[in-house]
Image (cartoon, rainbow, N blue to C red; front, top):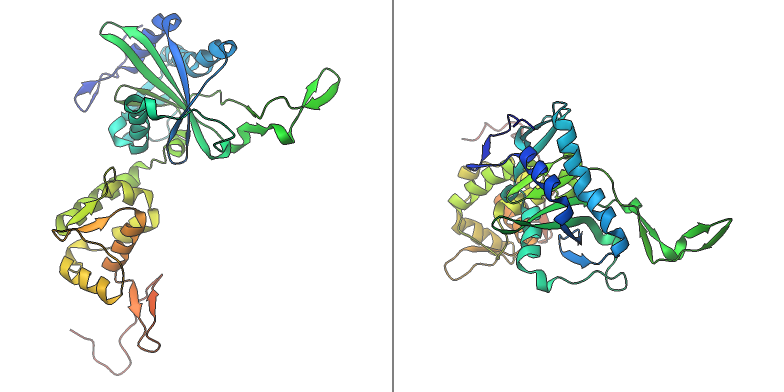
Length: 334
């Protein structure tokens, strides 16, 4: 196959998805597969599968994606940066793993904390809380074992509970013989190769990893403004831009703020004390943010959304504010 015009580099490292597909096609008989389920918190679970399904696992996850790339390359398939996605036909997209926090976390847990991952059991875990399924493929390369992943979202309709399902055997209904039956998605959705994410289906990729590029760009910019003005201390594993991107209402509120004109840190802490809110600080005075609740309180304070009624002395959180005009007969202030 001729090399496509997809030699652009991302983060300085070239990745040619067409070259990768051809490489996998050549070694497909030497590829081993392992399956993982992951829940809405992006916690992975190992899950075994029967030897009778080995061929199906390779076919539905690996071979379908690889074959699509190879066959469609000769029909004009292109690979472009996800950040420039515009819903074009005959296009797959790519981005870097580092940009998609949930995907990066999931891969890190599988690669670095494998021994601590539990096996999935319906008796212990609820299948309804599983968000997706991921196949990890490994094969021998020139520099040792190599790996790549294929991920798919699991819609709620994909599962059938044994207790409420019957099966047809010949001419009659019989009790369903399994706890759960799963209709495996057969479309191409997402591949993860080294530090690259290949996006076959934009909508399913964004749903699978709760990723919104435009919101993330805004969150990155606002997080930078906030950390330049305020001393913040986040719990290990949390990032301000990640928290903001996850909480769309808070991000929208921050987006409307003029951070440069917001109250300084000492006044914000005084305001929190006045409102009797537990805004914690560490020894050097940094505001501690342990979760999205702390972030919400911090942003609400910045937006002056707390109020003590002079009538009844009770505290209120203001859900929406409308600036009133000057009273009749009074000259404008300032």
